[in-house]
Length: 203
Ligand code: MD3
Ligand code: FE
Image (cartoon, rainbow, N blue to C red):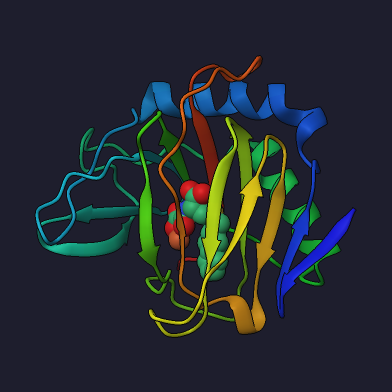
Protein backbone atom coordinates (compact mmCIF):
# COMPACT_ATOMS: atom_id res chain seq x y z
CA UNK A 1 0.00 0.00 0.00
CA UNK A 2 1.43 3.34 -1.07
CA UNK A 3 0.17 6.51 0.61
CA UNK A 4 0.98 10.12 -0.26
CA UNK A 5 1.61 12.14 2.92
CA UNK A 6 2.53 15.30 1.04
CA UNK A 7 4.10 16.21 -2.28
CA UNK A 8 7.30 14.13 -2.43
CA UNK A 9 6.57 12.21 0.78
CA UNK A 10 5.52 8.61 0.26
CA UNK A 11 4.60 6.13 2.99
CA UNK A 12 4.99 2.41 2.31
CA UNK A 13 3.06 0.82 5.16
CA UNK A 14 4.53 -2.43 6.43
CA UNK A 15 7.16 -2.57 3.70
CA UNK A 16 9.89 -3.86 6.04
CA UNK A 17 7.85 -6.14 8.35
CA UNK A 18 8.98 -9.37 6.69
CA UNK A 19 12.63 -8.29 6.94
CA UNK A 20 12.51 -6.97 10.50
CA UNK A 21 14.52 -9.85 11.98
CA UNK A 22 17.37 -9.28 9.50
CA UNK A 23 17.32 -5.54 10.10
CA UNK A 24 17.38 -6.02 13.88
CA UNK A 25 20.30 -8.43 13.65
CA UNK A 26 22.18 -5.91 11.50
CA UNK A 27 21.43 -3.10 13.96
CA UNK A 28 22.80 -5.36 16.71
CA UNK A 29 26.08 -5.78 14.82
CA UNK A 30 26.40 -2.08 14.09
CA UNK A 31 25.72 -1.10 17.69
CA UNK A 32 28.20 -3.70 18.99
CA UNK A 33 30.93 -1.80 17.07
CA UNK A 34 29.51 1.73 17.51
CA UNK A 35 27.32 1.79 20.61
CA UNK A 36 24.13 3.83 20.96
CA UNK A 37 24.81 7.06 22.82
CA UNK A 38 22.93 10.21 23.81
CA UNK A 39 24.70 13.03 22.02
CA UNK A 40 24.81 16.66 23.10
CA UNK A 41 23.33 19.44 20.97
CA UNK A 42 25.24 22.65 20.20
CA UNK A 43 22.99 24.28 22.82
CA UNK A 44 24.22 21.86 25.50
CA UNK A 45 21.15 19.61 25.79
CA UNK A 46 21.57 15.85 26.01
CA UNK A 47 19.30 14.27 23.40
CA UNK A 48 16.69 11.84 24.75
CA UNK A 49 17.05 9.76 21.57
CA UNK A 50 20.14 7.50 21.57
CA UNK A 51 21.93 7.26 18.22
CA UNK A 52 24.50 5.35 16.27
CA UNK A 53 25.50 5.29 12.60
CA UNK A 54 26.80 3.06 9.85
CA UNK A 55 28.06 3.72 6.34
CA UNK A 56 30.76 6.01 4.98
CA UNK A 57 29.55 8.87 7.15
CA UNK A 58 27.47 9.32 10.27
CA UNK A 59 25.51 12.22 11.70
CA UNK A 60 27.12 13.65 14.79
CA UNK A 61 26.28 16.49 17.14
CA UNK A 62 28.34 18.01 19.95
CA UNK A 63 28.91 21.46 21.46
CA UNK A 64 30.67 22.58 18.26
CA UNK A 65 27.71 21.81 15.96
CA UNK A 66 26.17 19.21 13.67
CA UNK A 67 28.20 17.40 11.01
CA UNK A 68 28.76 14.15 9.13
CA UNK A 69 31.91 12.28 10.10
CA UNK A 70 33.45 9.01 8.88
CA UNK A 71 34.92 8.39 12.34
CA UNK A 72 32.83 7.59 15.41
CA UNK A 73 33.98 10.26 17.89
CA UNK A 74 33.25 7.93 20.82
CA UNK A 75 35.32 4.96 19.61
CA UNK A 76 37.80 6.84 17.41
CA UNK A 77 37.24 4.11 14.81
CA UNK A 78 35.82 4.17 11.27
CA UNK A 79 32.07 3.63 11.30
CA UNK A 80 30.82 0.10 10.62
CA UNK A 81 29.91 -0.50 6.98
CA UNK A 82 26.28 -0.34 6.01
CA UNK A 83 24.95 -3.91 6.19
CA UNK A 84 23.55 -5.26 2.90
CA UNK A 85 20.10 -5.85 4.44
CA UNK A 86 19.86 -2.16 5.35
CA UNK A 87 21.08 -0.93 1.99
CA UNK A 88 18.61 -3.18 0.19
CA UNK A 89 15.53 -2.04 2.12
CA UNK A 90 16.50 1.58 1.42
CA UNK A 91 17.17 1.23 -2.28
CA UNK A 92 14.00 -0.83 -2.86
CA UNK A 93 11.85 1.78 -1.17
CA UNK A 94 13.58 4.64 -3.00
CA UNK A 95 12.98 2.88 -6.32
CA UNK A 96 9.25 2.47 -5.56
CA UNK A 97 9.08 6.16 -4.74
CA UNK A 98 10.74 7.20 -8.01
CA UNK A 99 14.41 7.45 -6.95
CA UNK A 100 15.97 4.38 -8.61
CA UNK A 101 19.49 5.86 -8.46
CA UNK A 102 19.53 6.65 -4.72
CA UNK A 103 22.63 5.14 -3.06
CA UNK A 104 22.75 6.18 0.60
CA UNK A 105 26.22 6.66 2.08
CA UNK A 106 24.99 7.27 5.63
CA UNK A 107 22.51 5.54 7.90
CA UNK A 108 21.58 7.14 11.21
CA UNK A 109 19.99 4.72 13.68
CA UNK A 110 17.78 6.30 16.35
CA UNK A 111 16.69 4.46 19.49
CA UNK A 112 13.68 5.79 21.41
CA UNK A 113 12.92 4.48 24.85
CA UNK A 114 9.63 5.48 26.52
CA UNK A 115 9.76 9.24 27.17
CA UNK A 116 12.20 10.01 24.35
CA UNK A 117 11.23 12.56 21.72
CA UNK A 118 12.71 14.47 18.79
CA UNK A 119 11.69 18.10 18.55
CA UNK A 120 10.66 19.74 15.29
CA UNK A 121 13.66 20.22 12.97
CA UNK A 122 14.83 20.20 9.37
CA UNK A 123 17.48 17.82 8.02
CA UNK A 124 19.85 20.15 6.23
CA UNK A 125 23.36 18.86 6.92
CA UNK A 126 23.42 16.75 3.74
CA UNK A 127 25.29 18.09 0.72
CA UNK A 128 22.82 17.35 -2.09
CA UNK A 129 19.15 17.93 -1.34
CA UNK A 130 18.26 16.16 -4.62
CA UNK A 131 18.72 12.92 -2.67
CA UNK A 132 15.67 11.77 -0.73
CA UNK A 133 15.80 10.46 2.84
CA UNK A 134 14.40 6.97 3.42
CA UNK A 135 13.18 6.07 6.91
CA UNK A 136 12.30 2.68 8.42
CA UNK A 137 10.40 2.35 11.70
CA UNK A 138 10.73 -0.71 13.95
CA UNK A 139 9.22 -1.54 17.33
CA UNK A 140 6.83 0.59 19.36
CA UNK A 141 4.54 2.98 17.46
CA UNK A 142 5.31 6.69 17.45
CA UNK A 143 3.42 9.82 16.51
CA UNK A 144 5.32 11.58 13.76
CA UNK A 145 4.79 15.31 13.18
CA UNK A 146 5.11 16.56 9.64
CA UNK A 147 5.04 20.30 9.00
CA UNK A 148 5.98 22.65 6.21
CA UNK A 149 9.01 24.65 5.11
CA UNK A 150 8.59 27.17 7.94
CA UNK A 151 8.86 26.22 11.61
CA UNK A 152 5.42 27.66 12.38
CA UNK A 153 3.58 25.98 9.51
CA UNK A 154 0.80 23.66 10.72
CA UNK A 155 1.81 20.04 11.38
CA UNK A 156 0.00 16.85 10.44
CA UNK A 157 0.35 13.82 12.68
CA UNK A 158 0.91 10.27 11.48
CA UNK A 159 1.32 7.05 13.42
CA UNK A 160 4.51 5.30 12.31
CA UNK A 161 4.31 1.58 13.00
CA UNK A 162 6.66 -1.41 13.01
CA UNK A 163 7.81 -2.05 9.46
CA UNK A 164 6.65 1.23 7.96
CA UNK A 165 9.01 2.75 5.40
CA UNK A 166 8.81 6.33 4.14
CA UNK A 167 10.60 8.26 1.41
CA UNK A 168 11.01 12.02 1.75
CA UNK A 169 12.13 13.76 -1.39
CA UNK A 170 11.53 16.68 -3.68
CA UNK A 171 9.29 19.35 -2.14
CA UNK A 172 9.11 17.51 1.22
CA UNK A 173 12.85 17.13 1.68
CA UNK A 174 13.26 20.29 3.75
CA UNK A 175 9.98 20.13 5.65
CA UNK A 176 10.04 20.44 9.43
CA UNK A 177 9.35 17.18 11.23
CA UNK A 178 9.62 15.59 14.67
CA UNK A 179 8.57 12.68 16.84
CA UNK A 180 6.30 13.07 19.87
CA UNK A 181 7.26 11.57 23.23
CA UNK A 182 7.28 7.77 22.95
CA UNK A 183 4.57 6.08 25.00
CA UNK A 184 5.45 3.10 27.14
CA UNK A 185 4.70 -0.33 25.72
CA UNK A 186 6.21 -3.64 24.83
CA UNK A 187 6.67 -4.65 21.20
CA UNK A 188 6.61 -8.44 20.71
CA UNK A 189 9.75 -8.46 18.53
CA UNK A 190 11.67 -5.31 19.45
CA UNK A 191 10.78 -4.92 23.12
CA UNK A 192 10.34 -1.69 25.01
CA UNK A 193 11.70 0.69 22.39
CA UNK A 194 11.35 2.13 18.92
CA UNK A 195 14.20 2.01 16.40
CA UNK A 196 14.30 4.25 13.36
CA UNK A 197 16.71 4.04 10.45
CA UNK A 198 17.25 7.08 8.24
CA UNK A 199 19.22 6.62 5.04
CA UNK A 200 20.90 9.67 3.59
CA UNK A 201 23.09 10.79 0.79
CA UNK A 202 25.31 12.89 3.03
CA UNK A 203 28.58 13.26 1.10
C1 MD3 B 1 10.86 14.46 6.57
N1 MD3 B 1 14.13 10.92 12.57
O1 MD3 B 1 16.76 11.29 12.31
S1 MD3 B 1 12.07 9.59 10.50
C2 MD3 B 1 16.04 12.23 11.98
O2 MD3 B 1 11.59 8.79 13.60
C3 MD3 B 1 14.57 12.11 12.15
O3 MD3 B 1 13.62 9.00 14.26
C4 MD3 B 1 12.75 10.70 12.90
O4 MD3 B 1 13.88 13.04 11.92
C5 MD3 B 1 12.63 9.39 13.62
O5 MD3 B 1 16.45 13.27 11.49
C6 MD3 B 1 11.85 10.78 11.75
C7 MD3 B 1 11.16 10.40 9.23
C8 MD3 B 1 11.85 11.53 8.52
C9 MD3 B 1 13.22 11.58 8.40
C10 MD3 B 1 13.81 12.59 7.68
C11 MD3 B 1 13.02 13.57 7.05
C12 MD3 B 1 11.08 12.49 7.92
C13 MD3 B 1 11.65 13.51 7.18
C14 MD3 B 1 13.57 14.60 6.28
C15 MD3 B 1 12.78 15.52 5.65
C16 MD3 B 1 11.42 15.46 5.82
FE1 FE C 1 15.02 14.52 10.81
